[in-house]
Length: 154
Image 1: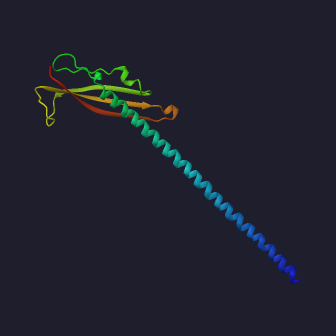
Image 2 (image 1 turned 90 degrees about the horizontal axis):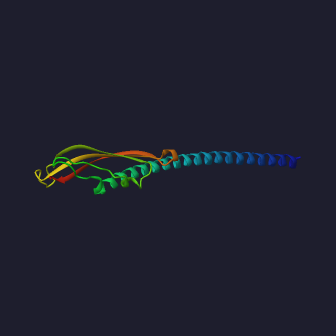
Image 3 (image 1 turned 90 degrees about the vertical axis):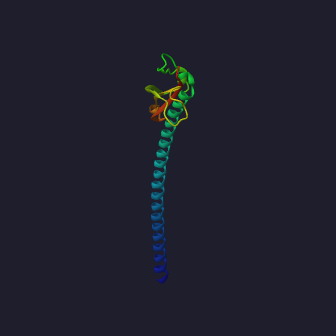
């Protein structure tokens, strides 16, 4: 009779061990699923930030491309007139962009830049570029930049 009691107690211990192991396995599984879900969310946020940065860099590159091409700013007209002309070739490398170049003001050369106000004039431009490829998940951004063009008086 003692053997039967001991045998029953041993079977009870094996059942408790199984139940404890299953409980820990369930808890570890839940923690793993929550960690994977959190990792996926962080990955999506990082991808979104990368696309926003890429869109900003494309907008800035478009503006830099316009500024660096002297053919986009052609001096014509009377001595106090500067006209701007953005060529179509300035935008060929930038798909999904919209560029606006606006001449804001014509003024004398600012002080402190080491130039003569009677020999140079400046024209202030506003250059803005919008990049929008959000439809394909590539991001969307707009950037505006001022540009001061200094030209000799004619």
